[in-house]
Amino acid sequence: MSGRDWLAAQRTEIAAERILDAAGELFAGQPAATVGMHEIASAAGCSRATLYRYFENREALHTAYVHRETHRIYRELTDELASITDPEQRLVQGMLGCLRMVRENPALASWFTASERPLGGEMAEQSPLIAAVTETFVGSLGDDDRVEARARWMVRILTSLLLFPGRDDTDEAEMLSEFVVPRVIAPG
Image (cartoon, rainbow, N blue to C red; front, side, top):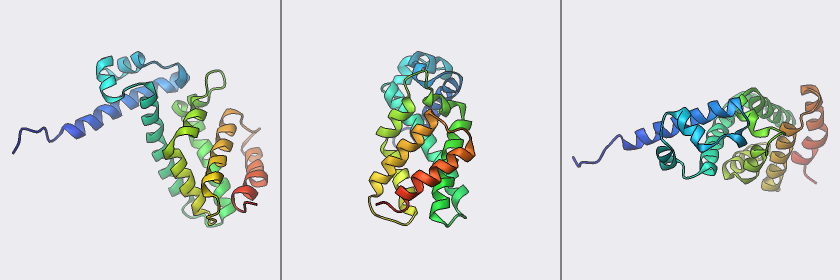
């Protein structure tokens, strides 16, 4: 057998996850936009040099964190929505579920702090993973016309509601039913 370290990939993944976990703990306590790489390295128990070995800059770390959480939310929503077959109900419940999951997670909610630069909005707009999972969801609603454009619009609506929530869940559900469902389910 060669001198290669056959566990290197697993150690790299574990180290990156540990760093992302530490970042998440910091994001839960303060707006994500204010958390620096030095703070993340300290919280993870590593040097800044080690941190930069795994994440070349703050943007790369932010992207990795958001993508990890996007995968988690998408899996949970897929399970939650599995029994809903009506496209309109599926759309509203999917959007409300996404809003709830982000709001209930202090680390994710900090990305949508109105008092700081809204990193969550920027990330949602730029992330190919968020675009892909949203397009997959929109495509699952049954109409293949302009899926990409409708998914981009849906991300903007979610971002808007995270930054400027409705009065309560009922208010948001009514807004989604009245204004979003007709455009996403039956685009004109």
